[in-house]
Image 1 (cartoon, helix red, strand yellow):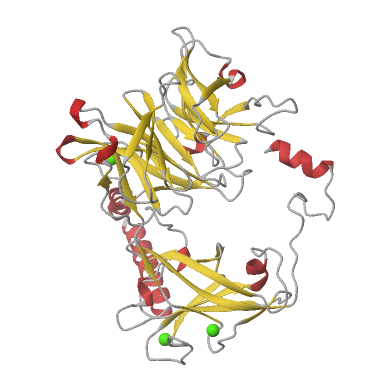
Image 2 (spheres, rainbow, N blue to C red):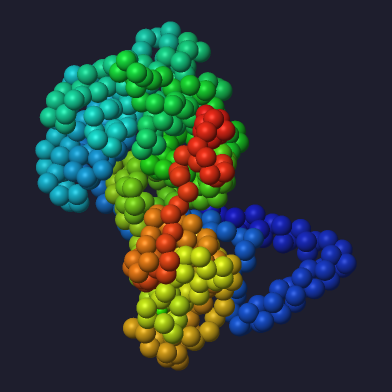
Length: 464
Ligand SMILES: [Ca+2]
Ligand SMILES: [Ca+2]
Ligand SMILES: [Ca+2]
């Protein structure tokens, strides 16, 4: 957790130190808050203005000991896992390494040093594992630059292709490292010291290769200023969709490096909702995060208890909840032209008090509810009220329909609810709906949604 408690109590004590007038205002505020809480069922309601400060609960990290060179006490660093979970790309003693396993979890059983490439400082491998982006020490007057290596198939050796000279042209001692890319490889984030300290930068391009098959340069290096004012930031990981970023930093009074997460609604928006990721502790350094695509498994580098260094793995703790879309109906028809609300209940049970859910964290297919209340509306498996209070939520039907691809009458879709409990445990549940009517989403390329794909849409894309 980000420790804002000390900040909050400082603020409170300032209030109390003020005049009697201030004190009475404070009492008035507390009594108003209390009556609001009482009106909402006597349980502390989640206040919308306070968002979660921590990104969920994670299992106790486990060391991937087999990736270390234990005989020489050289730890593995900078994890980057292949999409199939079978190959770990990482670094050891400055050398790029590949380690292999037969199943997407469990220990890696063999490895290969990528000796065909020079030493590196941070790596990222494309989804098809045919392009490897790595930082490299060029020569004393230039510094470290990001390079590309490619291969035609996974069985082949890597071949260096060249460096991203456009973003590095200011050179001369400049250190650019730790590349991480979106799945389309058109947006790159990386670490750069060009302001004097290590911070995160981003650069973009319109295609991976040009018409002649040569790789395309990244352009427009821009500092991602919102992630940390004047603090150092290291080793970014960008999610495939470019909307969630993880990075190492020392923020908010931390005494060691920790892993932070931030999100943005679209490429046009700055990152916000900066949260410390739950495995972070002030006892140890945690950085070099790498998440699986489902954001449920986190690999990172840490030097932990008993001075053990290396790549650690942790899993997001997820509690399943029972979801009933349209309580009282088991078929759950969803009219795609519906203008109203879609009611959804998360069911309480003897061992599950729905007041433990942080209601504002709930998303149905990524969509937030417009209203929530606490009422016993249903029981499990289509039963009516069962004596246990449920969390009932109302979503705007058209917001939910907006998340669908093309659907036809009578299609059955599974809708997923995600959120967190007040103790930050992630929760997940789902229910099915039966589609009424037909829905075809607007053309993806029609960015400004005016029904035609033209230069106006392209102008928006190129601004991104
Ligand atoms: Ca730490
Ligand atoms: Ca139902
Ligand atoms: Ca119930």
